[in-house]
Length: 248
Ligand SMILES: [Zn+2]
Image 1 (cartoon, protein in one colour):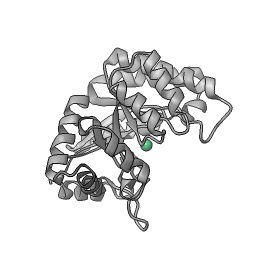
Image 2 (cartoon, rainbow, N blue to C red):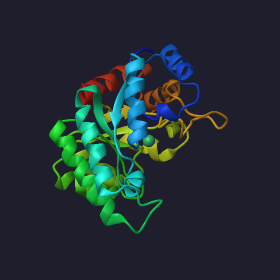
Image 3 (cartoon, rainbow, N blue to C red):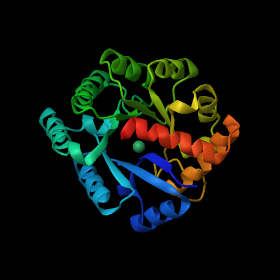
């Protein structure tokens, strides 16, 4: 298989990065989008994109990291992202998370709104985290009229899947689809033209005894092909076209 894509991972947090990239190439991964979560990891993401041909950078502010920053620090990162607009393919990882912190919802929404406006200004797609905040995240994206949206590792129910689908958002399916029925159901409900693949590496591994890495997207491809009753090659080609439509 060639042209396999991993649109959401954290390569800067993986161990032995050259080996991870090599194994990805050997497995047929054509593109890895490494996502920044704070000022430091954004810097590393840019460096990784410069170092490896198959790596592209997305810069962002992880919702929980955003809460640790002063407004001034937050705005400084947004300025940095804007400064590097020509070196990045997307804004990510960004979004809202009510799973870990439950008493700062308004601040999270305010922060995310600023990010959405930046993404629209720069005409970049967003890789969106929405853990336990799926409904509010979709509301905010809809009211801000956001166009290029990828819901990463979407945990919302099928009603919310339909809402996001109706708004033409894409879904990036993580590698733990091999065992999680929720993602299998998303794949069955959403047309192939709106699906992407990701790892969220080093997390969400499809294997109990190994940390996740981009090469493992191949496991998702097999599962998606199964569910869609297509060949793995057909799935890879369709998802690659989706990748080009969203990011190129
Ligand atoms: Zn992530």
